[in-house]
Amino acid sequence: MCLAIPAQLVELRPNDQAVVNLGGIRKEISIALVADVQVGDYVIVHVGHAIGVIDPEEAERTLALFAEMQSTLEGAP
Image: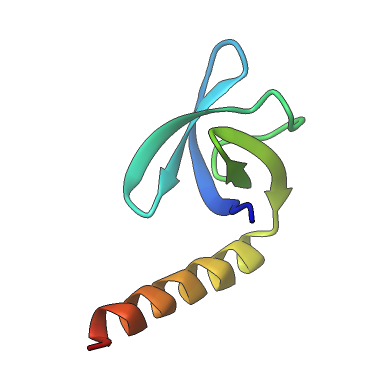
């Protein structure tokens, strides 16, 4: 099973590199596989590569679900 997560692009760098915000953690990724991304866009990140652009509303819903799952797990015995 593969996991790709939405992250907001916060900085563009040279050589198809960028920085995304993953729940408060900044991570450098490759944007070589996506075209015309801009700061503020949400991308789907898989093993250090942006593999697609996602609608901001869908990204927020997905991130809210991840937060809900984490909260549920933290409250489990």
